[in-house]
Image 1 (cartoon, helix red, strand yellow):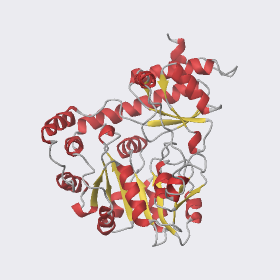
Image 2 (cartoon, rainbow, N blue to C red; image 1 turned 180 degrees about the horizontal axis):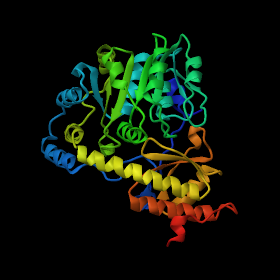
Image 3 (cartoon, rainbow, N blue to C red; image 1 turned 30 degrees about the vertical axis):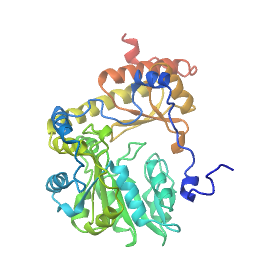
Image 4 (cartoon, helix red, strand yellow; image 1 turned 90 degrees about the vertical axis):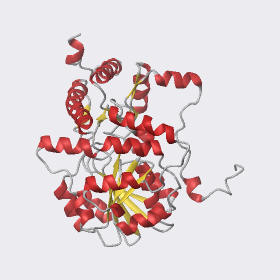
Length: 384
């Protein structure tokens, strides 16, 4: 029995030991030299407009930031056609997930989502003292019927990550609308649209409708939509995201929020990034082209790849994903093995720049060559 076991809360005990990266200088140096395709980051970084705004804000960092993020909230409200009371800015969308769970859940209550979805849902629910119920998937996609069956009288939240992380699969708008209509009144639907800009672009090219989520908010539905500046806008290091939902619910969440949690530099960067359409266009167009290249390359190595609507690919490598990731790291590339998501033979790889993706495929080719007789030399390697 450890010294503090009886003193800490049950959620703190039940959450287990997180994966803590090595803090040695040698480990940090090795990681800095990797092609980093394991965290779904924007390989192009923030726009120059956002960089300039952040640099200008540095001179005022002796003062605390606007605790209400007033200017950014107003701009976001105008951008999305909502009153400011229906917008809440937090230190990343994961901070709002935590606030929603702490506001809506308690011991004896639960939240429902799908298996193999965003791993932070479980952490946020357990930290609030609730229970997360995971419905089974169907062919790498959400099984909405199974999610509906899992809801009971103690359910307060349903999480739908759309597109889903880590599978990259997308629910089209009519499907979500039909699902929402069947939810009981005591349930709040949290639509996690962290990859909104990528999914919208994919949907346009595929001639399908991605999302009507803000219509639900405008109509007063029990829906909170999560968006972030971490992905397409390239501001992951600043930790800034936001939610769009019922004003009353967001006001309750605001009571639970830490003071001055969103820095003045982050607010300045978010404001400048919001309307930089040229930067977003460059990012999403590269993402579409490179997703196709990666899908072809990985399929050519004999791996099963799920078509994506996000900025990453979900891939079944047919062997222990942890070992595969370790061998790939020895070749200079970091990707995410998905054993903790319940997919022990699958990896998630971020779609990077053309140069990064070629380096990844060359490394994957070397790893695949050592994996057995099923290896097929891919076309990109034969052209060298």
